[in-house]
Amino acid sequence: MREFIIATHNVKKLVELDRILNPLGIKAVTADSRGIDLSDVEENGMSFKENAAIKARAAFEECHLPVIADDSGLCVDALGGRPGIYSARYGGESLSFADKITLLLAEMDGVENRTAHFCCAVCCILDDDRVIEVEGRCDGTIADAPCGDGGFGYDPIFLVDGVSFASLSAEEKDKISHRGNALRLLRDALSKEDI
Image (tube, one colour):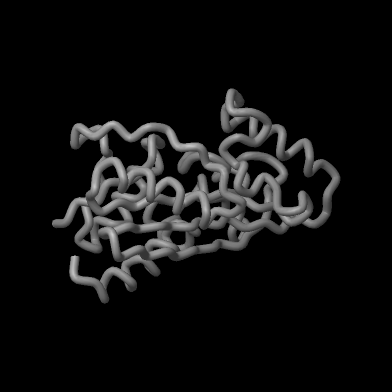
């Protein structure tokens, strides 16, 4: 099984990535577990794709091993696409996700159009010459209140066919999620590469 460094400090995201990538013959590992110190990178891109590339390039420059970085977030139509690329920092970096959810629901109070989507951009750098970039999306709606105790981030308020991501099993979520969709595209691209 080939190991790829995952450029994230988010443990829940690492677990999800490993779960989705493992059947592809890829073992997701942290840089820390390989004795590599990945410094925090300023995500100053203007899109999920740019931020994923920034993180992947920084990680690759430090370790010179195959890396995968993703940037993902929730885009709410009635909020002009917010929180979008600022999903993790929505309302301030010190807010917990429970508080971010409360803030978002307050902004959505009385709003009829509750359509939204999750977006995930993935950048995979295999070596100096080979870079793969893919994006996945999952459309849904914003709930009136949190529901379910699984997942992470905004999962308790993101509904697909009336069911929150937080109410789905990991396997059910992986089949339809933005990250699952992006990683299947990555799998297809990697199948054409000599890795």
